[in-house]
Every structure is written in C-alpha cells, then in structure tokens.
Image (cartoon, rainbow, N blue to C red; front, side):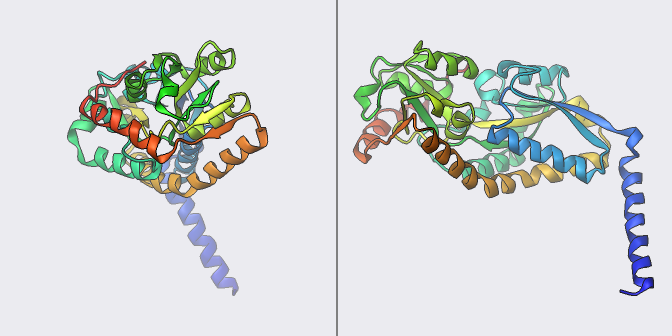
Length: 325
C-alpha cells in the first residue's frame, strides 16, 4: 500500500469519527439509560438484551450507555412494566401478559400446544407487533414502546415424581401461571401462583410438588437441574409466552432521531441474533443436565401427548384470558 493510499484511508477513518461525533455527540454528552429485569444475567433472554445494548452503545459511538439491574435488583417481575410506565426505569424486560394481563391482553396471544419453535414464535410476534395497531396500542396506552419480543423456550414441568401420563398430574401442587396454569388445572393438578424465584426454593424444600410455566432454558439457568428429581415435557406444551423488552415512551421521545434510528435498527436484528444462538444454548443446557446428574428426563409417549392435547388444547384456545400473577 502506497503512502498516499494509507493517508487517504486515515483521512476516511478520521472523517468517519467526526461524523459519528456530529450525529451522536461527544463522550461528554452521553445518554445513560437504565435497564431492569427480574431474570438473572445467565438467562438466554437477558443475554440477548445484553447483546442489544452492546450493539446500541457501539453503533452510537458510546453516546448511549446502559446501567443494568438484573435478577430483580431494581424491580421484581410484577413491577417492571408499571415501573416503565411511570419512568422508574428506562428500559425493561418482563412478561407483561403474565403480570398485567388486563393491560396487555393481545400480548397473551401465544398459547400452548401450537408450536415448540421459539424462533418461529419470535419472528411471528415481532411481525405482528409491526403490523397491528391494536397490539402497539396496548403498550402506548401504558406509556411504553415495545422494542422487541422473544419467544420462550419450550415449557417443562420439574417435579418430585415422574409425570408419564395424564393421571400422574392429578392432585399435584404445581407452580404455574398464565395458560399453563389453565391447562394443568383442566388435567387435575392444583396450580400454585408463586413468583418464579420463590418457587425454585419451594420446589427444593418440597413445599410444592412441581414447577411449571418454566421455559427449558430459563429453568436450567436458575439451577432447577441441580436438584429436581424429574423433568417432563408435559405432553408437548411448547412455547406458551413471549418476553417483552420495552422502553418508556417519554424516554423514547426525548432521544434524538439518529439514536432512535440506531435503536430500531438493532432491535430489528434481534430475532436473527436469537435464531443464531438458540441451538447452541439448548445444547449447553442439555449438557448441564447430564453433567449435574440429578434429574431424569421423562418424555410422554405419543399416545399420552395426544390424550393430553385433546383434553385441553381446544378449551385453552377458546379461553385466552389466562391466569396471571
């Protein structure tokens, strides 16, 4: 490379830095946004949010930074979206359909026994959010803007005894919420409404017989595989909910158009990023279960899955009110 070529490339690099400084300001004019979730830092959903925040910071040349509060350090699960509405936090990730079902009715559209494909749910829900004024309006009425949603991994039931057939569920006290609680109640179990974190200890102390409304990856992230004797697919309940990562609407409106463009650009890439890392996360979770050696995986037979689905799927789809926390 000649001296002139190197000088030209250096000039282009400096010009690029100057343009970034013009668009996003200098280090002294940073926008620091707070982020809160009740999921812990190891959770796959939080890892995606962390990637999103890192990309926004990078693409704004450090003009936007984030203070993060995970594992309920700032707000618990039921408080994330109310906190977003009133500006107690700038950006938050939770499950509004579970904690505020009356305010986020359409966000409860994801139901069991439809699919076990988390990526497909992610793409479908984000597309719906772009095209449905009614869905966007649910968030806007609460002074919130949905940035993106992620489909949970497949629901599981962690328990003190094996669940191999429908009759095994009868009388079991199982921590469960939303449509999973509806399904288990129809099948003869006793839904116990309990916060996710509290239920981990309750299962370990045998205060409850089972733990559900438990996405597979999140369950492993909180360590259920380290002590639960059994885990079941629950007859193939599949993906039952989406998380929502949102920003306070007043905060959004005060961001510059340039920063808003970057945030929306990165948010639009989240589904592809999630799709690219999900299989690896599942493989790691399976390896963790094997290494821990504490949990036996129980899969219902195809005949039992059919029995279970026929007993409750239609009724669930007709009644989308769910059971919140």
